[in-house]
Image (cartoon, rainbow, N blue to C red; front, side, top):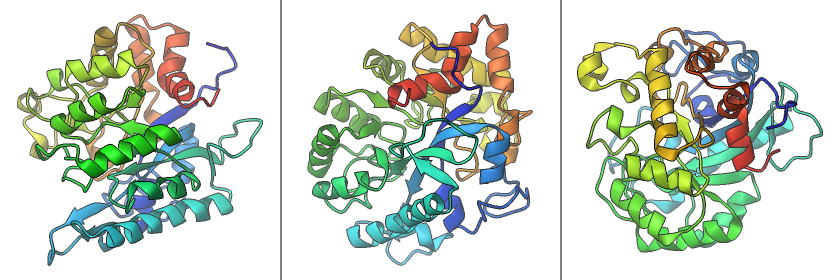
Amino acid sequence: MVSRTPAGWFDAHLDLAYLAECGRDMAAPLDPSTQPHPPAAVTFPSLASGRIETCLGTIFTEAIDPGSDAKYATIAYPAGDADAAHRAGCRQLDRYARWRAEGLIRLFNDEQSDRPALPIALGVLIECADPIRVPDELSWWVERGVVAVGMAWWKSSRYAGGNGTDGPLTAMGRELAQAMDELGVVHDLSHLSQRATDQLLAATDKPVIASHSNCRALIDGDNQRHLTDETIAEIGRRGGVIGLNLCSPFLVQAGDAGGPASGTRATIDDCARHVEHICAIQGDRRGVGLGSDMDGGFSADRLPVGITTPSDLNLIPDALKERGWTEDELRGFRFDNWSRFFGLR
């Protein structure tokens, strides 16, 4: 790896447009009391302070049952309503377009000879593909900055089963997978059911990622939100990358932490344990990076002890260094592994 690599971070999962749609002023200095999910950790100034220089920014939408009330109506749509999902997704896509026009972000395909702290370089990740009304529409999204798609969230989408279900990859999902492969859009496995994961991996031979997932073997043997050792190995075999998720209940065995409701926070050692397990399964240290999910539906008091804002992230590579990681390997974790995968250097 080249020595000119910056000391900053590539974070593969930040719900920036979602936070704005839910009322947060993302351009303002960080106010921990701001909604949603206080205490808050993420605004553009706090990302800059923490040297988050590149990221995947999501379009996150949530299907709700007809007649149900959504806490944040602008990101919700009635399950199965493709047009409503499209409108909800476009509202977030428009956020990224406005931030780009205001100089707060630049897209991966924007020309830039250097990498300043601002604007942050951003690729759009669609988290739940329902806003894509039909697979043939994917090119329209790619033209506007989409580089990766996760076909479902916790519930099933029209394309695939989410991790809260046993749903399959649907016929439309197979069509979307083919369209993604033809356009070079990356598959994100993070929220797929195991059944959909296995079927997608059988349907495509392309490199895949898990933007914000941890190790099922270290958490819960049957929780589909976490990756099996077999899936970790397959992501590595294809040259993909897994992003460490910093949500405490995704880092610590429920029995050890007293369960998610207890408020117990994970430790930096727990973070290192998941990172090293991924590396042990894959056989090297090139397939893991950061996918923090900061403020992605949970507050800063559910981050590991010692981390309250992006400026605290250095605690993780510090712990890895104590475990014998070289400077090149640490740069890989912070930045180079993701950057290499997306062809940014």
